[in-house]
Length: 395
Ligand code: PLP
Image 1: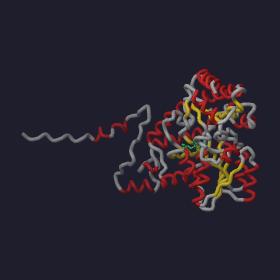
Image 2: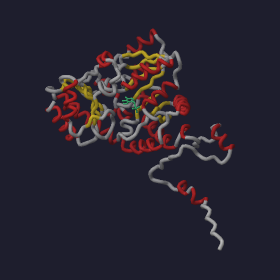
Image 3: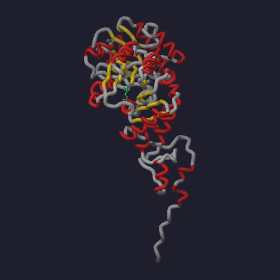
Image 4: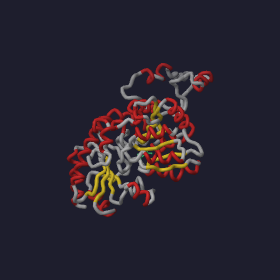
């Protein structure tokens, strides 16, 4: 008896997934693509095949889908996806600057960013001078004496919630020939789209509210075609790319992003008012939506539909011990050193995001031992307030 020949796999069936139209986009979990011959490969490298892929570091479909979505939200021509917010910032700076370049940054900014500027970039010959984001003239004073290449600011600062007048910063920067990078992580495009106000590059830690569920790490840059092509090339060369699954998760999250953000902004406004009214335990509340915020009028002028974001911070009466007691007394809200989740979380900037600042730096921007930063989620507001009320009573 002759052995049965194994059946050849049908070519038609082999790629059947390519002919269907899934309702949810597939995760392209591949690091590389097949090419039929060297001519086609050349066409790819020479830019004749514009919608193709070759190797994950050069670009991948899930990242491209995400980049398009965020660029739409930020109303810019193009986006670039990186492996984290810090990677995105490094790509934005690294694709623009060289040894001898100078940055003027707001001193009110995420602690990780300060550490990058203060402790790492000087080794590459890049110097940073700090200015006060609430007084744009201090940026002007810097560039009067020292030429700068980039201005770096956060729209709403982490963790003190100062508001950047992006229009003024852009005016001063462009007058002096510098580009403006705006970290829009706290505000999100729901509250403000800095490119509209002239910012050159808008940056996000997509790990935060764009992702929204504390389950992915991603960074995003948005801007015009030229700057983004330059950033994308630099990212390919240094390899700070995001994984397909994280990009896929982020795209899925963006379909509910607007609804989530609206609810969390409304909850944040209520919680800010509640905390402000508790004069027995709370010294001060930082939230741009409060009349008491020194830049409330500016925020109202700049922000969309009186939405002031989902982040706030407050100072308890007392010091570190009171902050620690308060944290321990919370039942549902957790101490989670990140932000932007559907769930309300708190953090202690002095011990987490800004722990590497000197005591003097912390004092200068207003970070105290009793400061609690809150990332307000989308739970039923009464549940959030009840947890805060109970913990405050026991502090
Ligand atoms: N920018 C801001 C305002 C942040 O709060 C953070 C992180 O907390 C980052 C950038 C860095 O983002 P990532 O942790 O995704 O690198």
